[in-house]
Structures are given as structure tokens and as C-alpha cells.
Length: 86
Image (cartoon, rainbow, N blue to C red; front, side):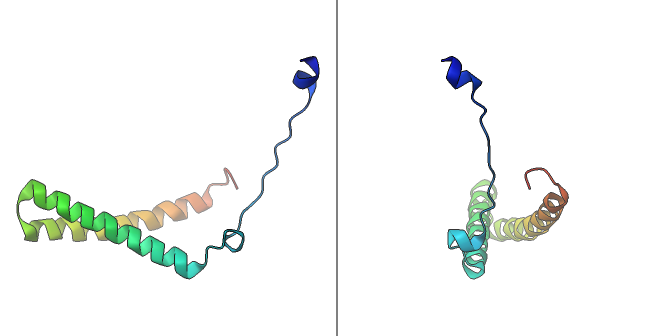
């Protein structure tokens, strides 16, 4: 038991690149777009259920789509400035 407690644990970090995971840029872009479309469709359906108005639901969905794209951009740019975890 003393031997286990006295051993020094070391942690190594390794950066995994898209090439190592097999994730190509085109695939990542398609996944990003499909996720955003799925999220927007969900917002439109929820908005329709709540409001009962299809035009209003699509308006909410469109606003959600644009606002989340803009928010995501600034979110990513901010995280690129943070050195934690790099």
C-alpha cells in the first residue's frame, strides 16, 4: 500500500488532430449545418405548438437560426483567446 501511495503519477496530454480522428473538414461542415438545421426545425415545431401560428413559428425559427450563428461565432472567437486547456 505504501508503494502505491508513494508513486508519482504523471499526466501526459496529447493533441488529437482532425487527421488522427478521420474527421475531414467537409464532414465537420456538413455535421455543423445538419445540427443547426435540426435545432432550428425543433425551434419552429416548439414555437408552432406554443403559438399555434405557422408564420410566427417560422419567424421565431429564422431569428433563432441567425442569432445562434452569430452567438456561436463570437463564442468560438472568445474561446480561441482563452489559453486554458491548450
